[in-house]
Length: 213
Ligand code: GTB
Figure 1 (cartoon, protein in one colour):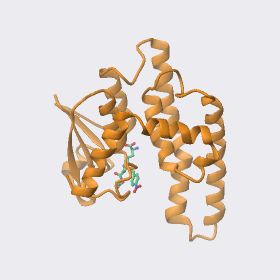
Figure 2: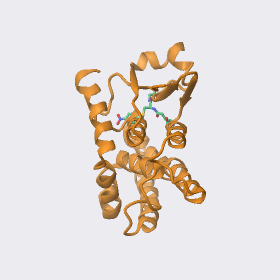
Figure 3: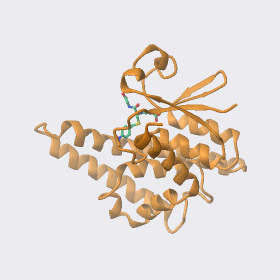
Figure 4: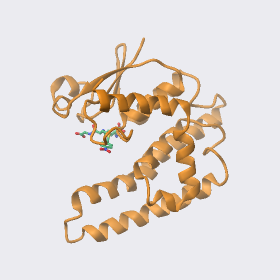
């Protein structure tokens, strides 16, 4: 059964691969799974047909037969559990890779999103600049801990896994200049982005931005 995912009909990121359908595309490419994409407008995302798939009216969603999923973490875990390529077979290694998936989404991504919210919507507030600096310091704490963990390794725990896929995706969203203060993490992101599966996923989402398909 070929799954269908949803993506922005017109991504506000200008095709830079920052919208979250990119993570799902990447996971599908890593595991060699074909997929279809249904593009949705911001208006359609808040209408009943889409809300039946995603209670928060967002992208991406994932439909496979009579299964419908939302939340990128859950979607990627589903893909990784059913297909080879994103989780080790050995149970403890598999549990650790899943731990890194949660760490990416629950521990590293929140301060990055906080900073983005402040930079986009709260900067004009009297406390905006102070909050921006605070969120940046929190990000630096997390990145220095993550960089200590990564050390000189290529990936977080042995071979590339769904944990790395999500961690690279989260760090990508931060981008320079803060990421460049941590050269080993900047190299880690570049390593993820140089994977052929990432490249295929990136090209596919860029094609939507350029050609609307
Ligand atoms: N926790 C959910 C998940 O991981 O699946 C979050 C899903 C989510 O935030 N989806 C966003 C969305 O649908 C798109 S990816 N937003 C519309 C809405 O909430 O109405 C977030 C995103 C949006 C834009 C950029 N950008 O322009 O760079 C980057 C990322």
